[in-house]
Length: 359
Image (cartoon, rainbow, N blue to C red):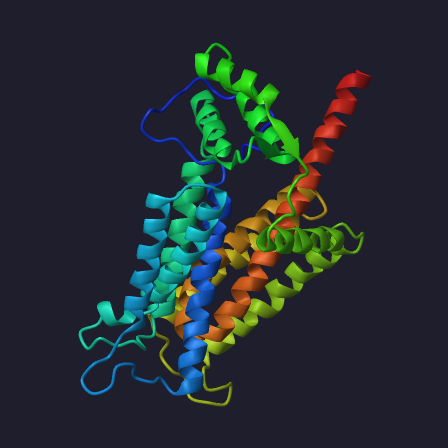
């Protein structure tokens, strides 16, 4: 839960060493998206150009070095400059640099410096998943403290320019101050100062914010249609039937049903095992559909999490392009399921409240 979504007051628990940034998740998104995009663009460029050697002769300037340069620029920006624009720019530049750096992971885990090491995509995928999960846990595992709200109010005041703030900036700062310790002298001083701050019209959102708003708006418009939930249920039923049949066929008969039986490798067997786990959750969800939609959706959600966190890892070693396509689709389905879970949960709470009020 982000601070913007939390309408409660900050907790009294404080940590004088680690103070979380309320804008961290947005910056993490930019970092990860730019890193993954960089990897895909590098692979596409090298494939199109025939893997050219930069440097000539015995020299080869690996793009890992350019990645290191990008990360260095991002670090220097954060060390020397302040402000929201710097935070987001350094997240983007750092993501590009990290993507160029981690793309050559195959060279550092093999004796022959093999850039084409097949499990490279799986390793990169695991790294990105771990980064996201660790950051998400650190930022959302507990509520923001009063001290964190106060410190973030100070951080947002970096946008104070020419004796005024944007309307939305002032409202956000005042909201955070309202969740800070009211007896803290700094809270009192800042609250008084904010009453004197002039405001200007809210600035136009950046390209990234506009793109997210556009996608979110059309996404919600789709999932709110009355046909979406039944079609999603049908999708999981069909997936359970076809998906497992396809996986068993591909693994046990890789040369086709008429070919000779080949012994599957570790990745194939691991993919089969994770798919069985995912399929089991889908089966449970299908069985619960007519008894409890909320339980069914939660089972489907677990199936997609197993698919994203386990199956996709091993699929990357078998079919990289297919894994990327499947990952994007799985993330969209997961988002739709969470939307339906939130809606069904709210509906259950409303029904329980109505029964309690009626009693």
